[in-house]
Image (cartoon, rainbow, N blue to C red; front, side):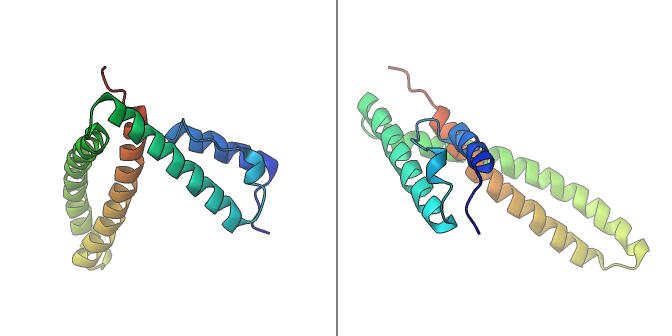
Length: 138
């Protein structure tokens, strides 16, 4: 129990390689226990991250950190604007919930937290994806 089937392992590898194209991940290493698979993937991703960082550092010293900071800032800006827009919709939606005998403040808090959590997940995914897609000009 907890081990990935061959089909699921292939799907996981495919998805992981979308985010970490340089990662050396083999599906056969995922068809083991969950802990062993997580450890294997983590080490492969860390190696891919180090390789990407080193490739950027080879272009210019400090470029790896600079690129990550810039990409994180861009994602923060884009996602925060979208979050604020979503919160305006939640405010309107929460007001309407008063007619359903629900506390609008509770609805606003709960829905706002869902959007915030979703924003954090998107931030991590988008930043990592952007970092691995980033190509420095020589």
